[in-house]
Length: 218
Image 1 (cartoon, one colour):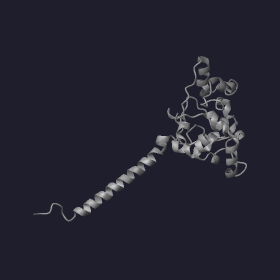
Image 2: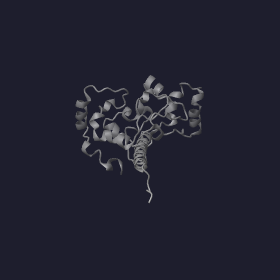
Image 3: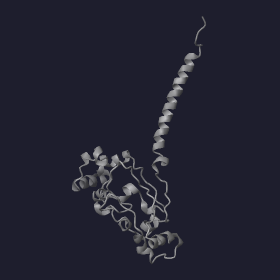
Image 4: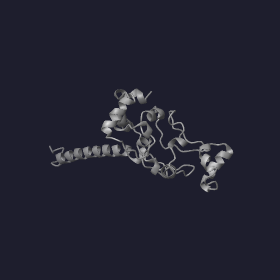
């Protein structure tokens, strides 16, 4: 009786198994890089706004404090977006005829808020409180990047859970003095390895429980 499989069957079977394994590894690698890519995370993708507001100009060049526009950042879960009145606090006298600011003037005249587009938007199942992070010495640029260099705002970090956990598991590596929270380009006055643990203790941060699921998922 003739053989069911020819002499090359073993070679073909081995090649098929190797090919399938290679495809599996390649697929896993592609999936990993895809979920960490700007296409998914939005990192580095500038988001157009209804008014061409430049943080590089207002924060970097003019030195505007974050809290002038984001008034609730020290007291609320949300940093908030600036009301039209905040914009017009300056632009009632500065660049009053600018075409780029026509949406701002129209917003004031019609008593309709500007439709700012969210750049940093956490999932609904994640609890995040801006105020507690500010009070505990986490700088704006730690999450938002060098906003003072951005003509158009883009995410600097993925905001994925593993990124949050890096800080929650080791807050001493990221914490800074409270008076430096809004400082761009901050440099620690002494080695962070020395300053960090000191501030964690001084601010009463319970680092042992920060990685507990209930901290962010309530």
